[in-house]
Length: 347
Ligand code: WQD
Image 1: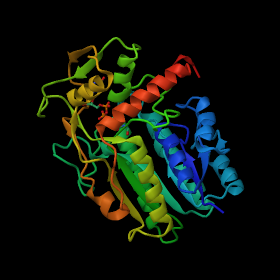
Image 2: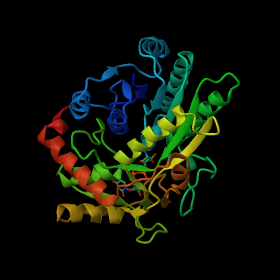
Image 3: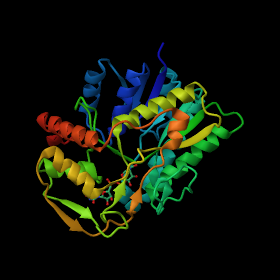
């Protein structure tokens, strides 16, 4: 009998790739998603990709009673918690909505999961918890000092999880995975980054420019203290990210960590600037992309790159795919999405 794993946000960008990786590893995902940022067609495409019928429930993570009822019907040994609002700028404009959904929802979810018997909890955190740190690479022991409400919610949920699993009668063990910059898509081009709302991130915006949905790319500043003056980030292929979640879950289920709570960076350790990412797309497409130089974006830092060594040491995991693969897979997915008319849908 395969271990059942509750996956909140399982129809989202990271979530859908985690569902595939879980199936490939012999787990049985139980998807919970309120469809706030996922198209209706994702489930059908996931079933086509995994070759199996998937359990999916339209439950909001703030619905504690609904979660408890679900967990009574579908006892899960593990939880991968991805559901969250995640736009930094929006979090500044609507902080209470972010605290209610992200933090309040996580408390309800963790409480329902623990009441149902607990188990292994993998939480989708973010490098944003490090805040504005001028460092060549970030290590997990660096201070958690987020500078925006979104990052604050991630830091708070890490603390909630840590306190829960450290309690005397704790029945769960927790792991927070601090993502750097997820990018790319599954090489089948059946799932990929497909936000219902307008994207904020560089990769999907470049794709919109490349397919003609957006007139040009604006580079947010070229006066940073970086090799070419543009922002430098640690882009990690979404399939590598998904496989890290499965690896983390497997280690947690086997009781593999000494401490009840751990936080690990998920990055490649390889820095790429905005200009280098654009150049990689132009090489893949064999054409120049329309672009203009703009002002810095409020809240941006010059460099955010992971020290990925702890995940290697504790999970035996490292990212395997580079920038070219992220660009190639993102572009193939864009072609497939447009062929199916996905981006014409309003659902
Ligand atoms: C990358 C670089 C921009 C768009 C965010 C969240 C983080 C995580 C990942 C959730 C920066 C530049 C971007 C554009 C540009 N999300 N850029 N023109 O800001 O590093 O991280 O997404 O966990 O929490 O903060 O990613 O892709 O928005 O920006 O020049 O139109 O691209 O200035 O240097 P970011 P991003």
